[in-house]
Length: 189
Image 1: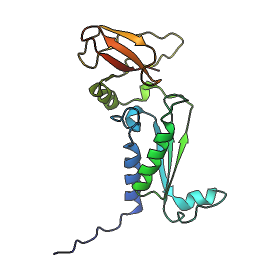
Image 2: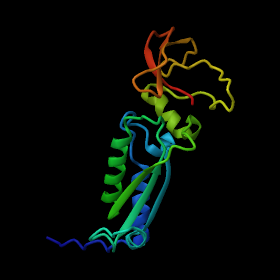
Image 3: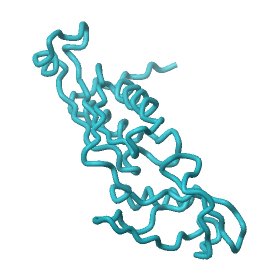
Image 4: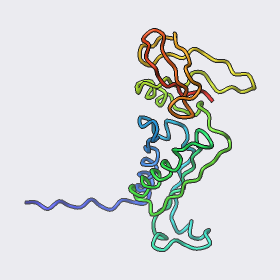
């Protein structure tokens, strides 16, 4: 038997990069094929020495002053999004698993999230998953224009809205008039 040589310890910069990658890779609990980065709700990830955070805090956190602290900023898709607490816990877990000694998650509501922040890769993932991605851009003024929604299954534009609210607040329920399958549509807003 040969003994494996342990990997050299990672440098703080390498750990910080791993933390950022881990946070970016956290999946949305309601649409698990999308990461919070794909969805556009991840606004910022900052990794700093925990001692810097302890200096600005009223009291330091015992045992973490020597390590790294991650500050993560997210914007919910809706102010009452029920997934935010799960996302917060998943972000904290991912950051700690990647090497952060502490992780705080800040919710920012302004500017309000818009589907314009979704990545093109995220929109493609939605379609592959069977959810029609948002079409067009969020309205800049008071007048919104509805565009045809393409069926993610047969790609027909012959679709109809069944309900303005689907399985979650950010989706509407549609049916394809050609293949007759119901599907969720991620609403533009």
